[in-house]
Length: 149
Image (cartoon, rainbow, N blue to C red; front, side, top):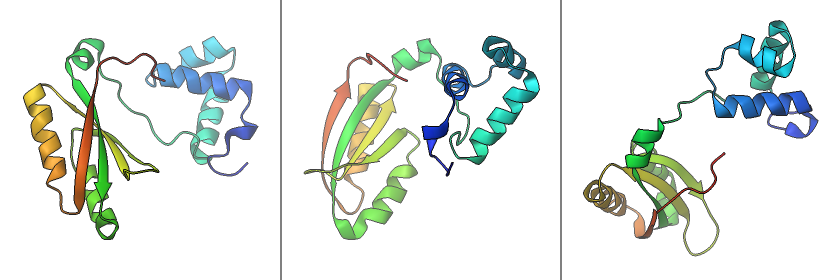
């Protein structure tokens, strides 16, 4: 199996990944018990999945009460090609940016950003629009998340 090639993952590997997506801080003893495996087997699977690049890291999921307070938006960004690398670097340096996707079509990028107030969100979107090489932006506020995996 090559790096990031998940076609050869077993059902147990997929179940382990699903459990980690739910809570990546679960103790190995709990993961092992829920999967019906030994701790050593779970450690071995985790190591293998990390080595293969299937698991690229572990992260924090925001608490529900804090998360509900945030106002999120998708910012579609049209760029000048010659500035693409510096634009991506500038956007990556913005702490309020949670994701940046390259896309096809009229726009080149979609940034997912979050702020605590509408005013903060407006200021953030203005900051993005002021980055050299960005021709224009179009923003959509996310009203509700229906499914998140």
